Image: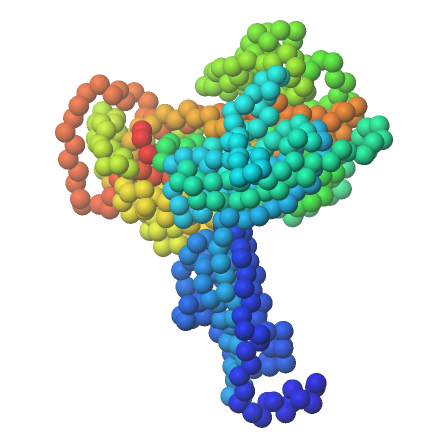
Length: 597
């Protein structure tokens, strides 16, 4: 074979391997297409990838990326637009080789699942990412002879917990969960759009679980100590993880809320999950580590979280706590490390739901200086574990706005205008730049507490321009924006901002599922916290409050506003994105979107 290959170099040959490789893939997946394996023999050959006859380059739009000098083509995520023929062409002066792929994007995917009686399973289904989700998909079970019954995803079991449940209502991901599987659940299930388009087919085979040994917790030892507290790599590692985690959260939240106001504190959510990580072991530990984007066995994560919280203590009020059923005997080592790293001694729930609810809400109000109240509506008597977090930020403008009440018109995504009180200054010293990578005008406003508020203003008030900025907001792009703004000198800018008060409570339970932590609600390995049985997370809540105000400005007077154009201007009177950033810790504290002040 070696001799044949050498001889071939003296000829102009065209190799077309087989006819074409046909691949059927699902929307949202990742596909790696390798070029020819023989290409390693031709180090000087040029590799060209084509899609539908057009060359693919680094500047090509879409989700395709050429990797390793053309050895691979990656498509991620796959959408309907990726359907078609891909050709890899390897060419030099004496030969030409071709490999082609024909990709079909098929949402009607077939799965086969085996499940044990009494277990919980998820049935997968997805709308194409290019589609608009206006109604949930419909799930059916085939009953034979061409008949079928529709599943009721709102059907409650006797304990109040839905046996069949839609995980992410009105989301592209239409996965459902079925709890307490029985033998009669075996069969074929189909997922369809409201228009009757088949999206997926799942075959379930339910078996009786073999007799298992008595429950054994496994690893119950305390979290490993941080061996090198003075390491220079620990803090940057946490900063990088926090940036990646923050943008992942924003991506999930904007998908579930494509047009409304958003606000969350990634540092608080990360802190709460890290607190839970302290007691997690085995698969649950690895799942939480993946969710918060920290490397596996990063033993210093809790030490670094404590250092981060101490850095931010002057401006950020954080409340993270675990409440538990008094019948449980929590691990003494977990309790000690919870106090050591998170200044939070786990608290026993009280005898009645009303007492527990009042205790939790009073604690949160105290921790947030009464900015956040009534976080919890009620506490079930059967609750085993509640994970809570709440944050509030207090910072003053380093450059004060003018003390004159003004009002202006804010243009919403649909073009409607609403009258809002303004923060205005005709010569505000701020940093402003157009960030090409984000396609947004960005302004940085310095705050006390060594923090900054970044406002990202899309090119127009349309949903398309807003979504374009959001799609480009990767953790890398945001860090590059921060670095660019640091070296941009401030200038006198005419600034107009709406006064806003955001008090938002995103659905943490759905967010936790999106993060790949559904097992927390079904039975998690928290042996470091409690060793006698698997624990079930009953509830998780997050609430964030942020206000852009000027003390003393009232909203009563209506004033006609006329602006001088002798200075550059920054007018955020249309939908925008904001990042509250700690310059000292180099992490995001809050991320939000304002579409309706």
